Image (cartoon, rainbow, N blue to C red; front, side, top):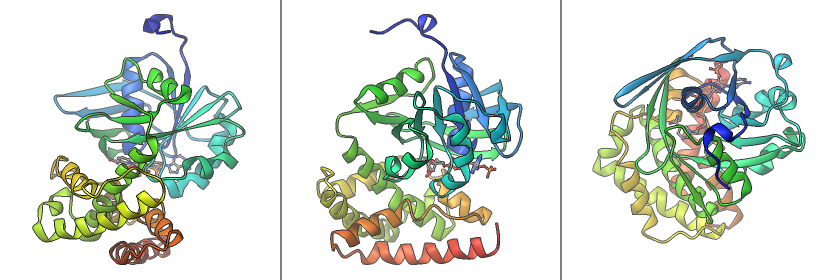
Length: 309
Ligand SMILES: NC(=O)c1ccc[n+]([C@@H]2O[C@H](COP(=O)([O-])OP(=O)(O)OC[C@H]3O[C@@H](n4cnc5c(N)ncnc54)[C@H](OP(=O)(O)O)[C@@H]3O)[C@@H](O)[C@H]2O)c1
C-alpha cells in the first residue's frame, strides 16, 4: 500500500563513498529530507553542493571518517568503485545487520556474489545507475540526469523498497522483471565509453569520430554474444542501440574511468571489460577487440598502482 511521505517512517541511510555517484544521491536524499543520511568518507565534509542543469542544491551533511563511529542502519548505499570494496569492508561490518539492505550503486556484474561475505547477513539490492556525474571537490559534484531514468532495480520487494526510499527525490526509477538483460545493456555502454575515454584521455567527444564508432561496434558485437551466452535477452541490433544511447550523453561528459586515468588512480577494469572477457572465456567466445582493450587498460592500471596513487 502506498502512504503519503509524511506517514512513512524515516530510514537511516549510510552512503559509503561520497564520490561522483555517492555525492549526487546523498545530495538528492538530503534535499528531500525524508531520511537520516550519514556519509562514510575518508575526507571530512560538512556540506554538499550538487550542480544540476538549471540549479544548484546546497545542503548540510553529516559525515563520519572512522568505521568505529558507525552504527547499524536500515540502508547502506555502496558507492565506491568495485575494486575499493575490500577497503570499504570495515564500514560494512559496522553498518550492516541482517535487517539492513545494501543497495549497490556500482557498474559491473556479480555484486551479490562479491558482497555476500562482507555484509553480515544483510540483503543485497543490486541497482543499475544511469546518471552521469563528476566529482568537482570532496563536497561538490556535478549531476547530469540520464535520458529516461536514473536507476533500474529488480521488480521484487527489495527493488521496490529502494524505489520507495528515493520517493520525493528527483531520481526516476525503472522497476524491471528482466534485470539481467538491463544489466548487460548497461555493461554494453560501459565496455565502450569507459575504456575508450580512458585510453584516448578524452571525454565522450572522442565517440563522435567515425573510426571510433566503428571500433565501438566491433567491441559491442563481441559483448552482445557473451551477454546472450550468459542468459541476457540481447538482439543483434543491441550493439548499434548501445552506441546510439552513448551518443545521447553530452560530448563534454566524462566517465569514471576517464577521471581515474587523469588522476592516476587504479582503473575499474576487472569489473567492466574484465567481466566481459572472463565471461567470454567461460563460453569460449573469441573477443579480440575486448581482449586488446583489457590488456592496454591493465597496463595503465598496473602503472598507476606501481606509482602508489
Ligand atoms: N561517475 C559516473 O558517471 C558513473 C555512472 C554510472 C555508474 N558509475 C559507477 O558507480 C561506481 C562509483 O563510481 P564513481 O564515479 O562515483 O567513483 P568516484 O567518483 O571515484 O567515487 C568513489 C568514492 O569512493 C570512496 N571510497 C573508496 N574507498 C573508500 C573507503 N574505504 N571508505 C570511504 N570511501 C571510500 C572514494 O573516496 P576518496 O575520495 O577518499 O578516494 C570516492 O569518494 C562505480 O562502480 C562506477 O563505475 C559511475
